Length: 453
Ligand code: TYD
Ligand code: MG
Image (cartoon, rainbow, N blue to C red; front, side, top):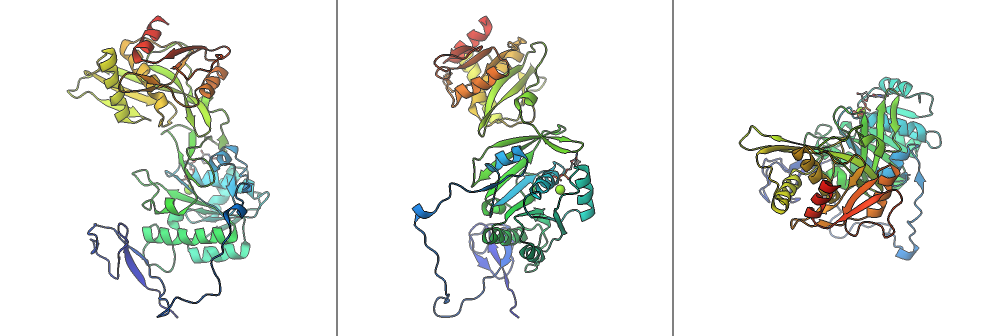
């Protein structure tokens, strides 16, 4: 029998060495050598002979536009996947422990089992535990194949005989290959087992779903190697303590990235939230200071959310700037613009800004509402209850238009908003029924408009 050799490869430069060392002898990087499998030695002299050539097909003859999609029965998950699972694709779902990854996948797998063969491999829980959860989710009678297995070779052998259309592995960190000595969850193990699963998915047309844990730093454990290897990476996340869960595509070879799906965790599993604007918006009965409503766009849909700010006298020499759900640098920049172009200084105040519902804002469209919320709290003057605003604020004090303005305004009108403050150029030509639109192009205009309006 051939003895399988292992060697150590530097993560940074790719240099190989037969022994482990703390520092890569080639590039000098520290702690980058990871165990991996040595390639089999080719025959000496010439290239190894094979009977096959690589297959060549002219591009126009390759049809990819109608990739058939397998619906998971959960519309919010299908949306994030770009319309459903694709045969032969590998999807990684990351998230903190206890967020509901196993619940989501068990629900999806149970739905899929109605029409396809599904193999659910559990490495973290016993089949009994999965059975209990299935009862709780009322899917215990679904024709789902369950296996408790962590050895990748045995897992693939089972899959080879069962030929499932969908294979779920919960979780990839528990899987190991017999070839390597390192512990399950180590980079080498992750890379090797994921590689085998990817090869299996591509060659058999099985859609593979992997659960991945998230490290303290917030990345999927296994230094990004996994994210490169798979087709789709989804993150399942939530606001601490909230029952809402947001699933987000950070990479998708079969659909748009940044697409968002929303679920609520209930006693009997995850329920889809079809109208997320309704939950991220905590409508106050009375106008309160420090609150501004804006419309963000996540993936392909607009969503109404509330931005809250609290500006208070600070007892500290260095007043705090706390941003939850947005970039703290952006907040500092906006406060500087407010000082320079409107003469409003908050040097001696603590400024806290929070995005309601645990969402994370990455759009510049939220600049104007963030500023207005801070200003509203600073002056203790509420903004009107039925006002929605968006717009990018530039360093010169200008308010710049953003994309998809009209669509955002329609979403606001749909939810009963009566006033909108938007950058010049973002309002539809003919206006919108039931929505009074104020267009602003400078910060000073915006401030004037809220004072008189
Ligand atoms: P789980 O899917 O086990 O999380 P993960 O696989 O991401 O670690 O979900 C665990 C949490 O969800 C647990 O705290 C209990 C809760 N839960 C519900 O609230 N309702 C349910 O129907 C189920 C199955 C779980
Ligand atoms: Mg789990």
